[in-house]
Amino acid sequence: MSQRGTMWWTGVTFSAIVVLFLILDVAGKLAAIAPVLEASEKIGFPGVTMARTLGVILLGCTLLYIYPRTSVFGAILLTAYLGGAVATHLRLGNPLFSHVLFGVYVGIFMWGGLVLRYPALRAWLPFQV
Image 1 (tube, rainbow, N blue to C red):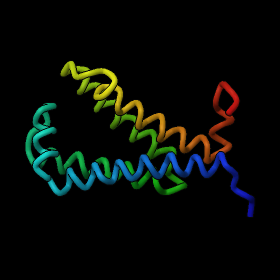
Image 2 (cartoon, rainbow, N blue to C red; image 1 turned 180 degrees about the horizontal axis):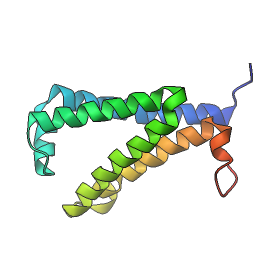
Image 3 (tube, helix red, strand yellow; image 1 turned 90 degrees about the horizontal axis):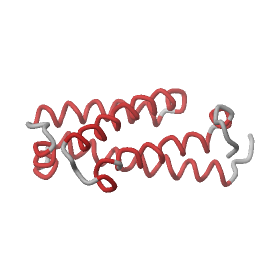
Image 4 (spheres, rainbow, N blue to C red; image 1 turned 45 degrees about the vertical axis):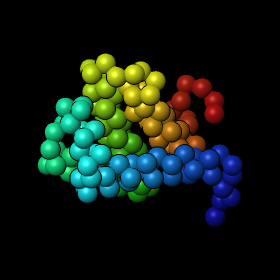
């Protein structure tokens, strides 16, 4: 068994932060709590059915990200999901750094966690980590 260094533990920490945030988001959507429904309506996704559908999609993508054999595939799907969030906030003219780019921040942590944990992914980068 190989020793796991600081880089690996930092990657685990990044990934854990992302997963905790996403699971909280999933829970809010599946429970259809009032603040989530109000926020969804403001960005053009009205109704309990829409919130729960998005919650199920996000849960599936997050579970794929959590499982090591499918983590890269999960990250690709989550990147698409987060891209939709970025596009939605951009379309509505929401503030850039707090709303529009929030999905980008989550994506950076998500991919950063994977890159720090998996040397094979670092080999694909055009720079040294």
